[in-house]
Each structure stands twice: as C-alpha cells, then as structure tokens.
Amino acid sequence: MKQCLLIFAALAAAFVSMPGQGQSYANGVYLTFENDTGYTVNELYMSPHRSERWGPDLLGDTTLDDGESTTVWADSIVSEPYDVKVVYSDGTEHVFDETDFNPTKVDRVWITSTNYGYVVFHWHNG
Image (cartoon, rainbow, N blue to C red; front, side, top):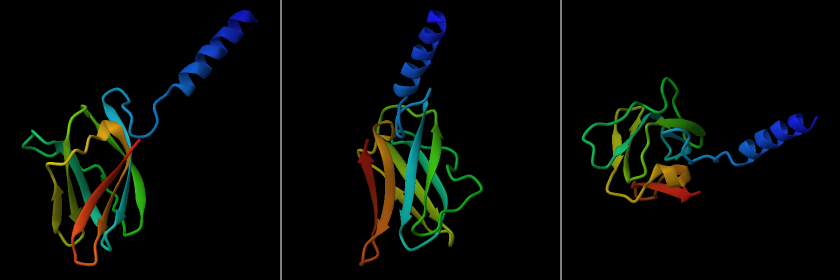
C-alpha cells in the first residue's frame, strides 16, 4: 500500500509540474495562435531570426478564419528570437521579423489589422 501511494504521489507531482502552453516539451512548444485580421490565414511559419529558411507550415492542412484561434505545435524550438510568416488565402504574405518574439517564453500569439490596413503581431509572455 505504501509503495502504491509513493507511485501515485510521484505521478501527481510530475503532472502538476508539467509545463503549460508556450513552455518547452522536449524541444517543442505549444502556442495558441489567433487571427484577428479580417482575412483567412492558410499558412503559418516560424524560424529562428538568424535562419534563412522557414520551418514547416504549422497549420498543416487547416486554415484559420478571421476571429478563430488554434493551438499549434512547433517542433525543434530553441530559446532565441524567431520570425513569423503568415500567408493568407489570396496568397499575400506578412513577415514579422527582428522582434523579441521568443516562442519558449510565450503562451499566446495573435495578429490584428488596424484601421489603416497595417497588420500587427502580438504575443503574451506566459
């Protein structure tokens, strides 16, 4: 019985100490991404700022309509600034680079469109 309680306590401690969204899970992170631009997002990419190549499309086969949010898994993430690229359903792109965006330190990201047509990238430190 004592051994069973010790195992249960160890499992409970492991569950409570698991990182939340935006925290690293063996070289990857979960991020909640929200689209508030007025347009449908077809593709979402991230890569370290120092890289010349984009990572895989984080949305996969899905799209993200205006006002929707989804949780994405980003693999092989390191703690450093990242750039983000968004591709809309009409093929236009927005690239957000040279920011202090570090996906290992945030839990939510979103893009918005201003009244003047500018698209702004935001994030919440978790």
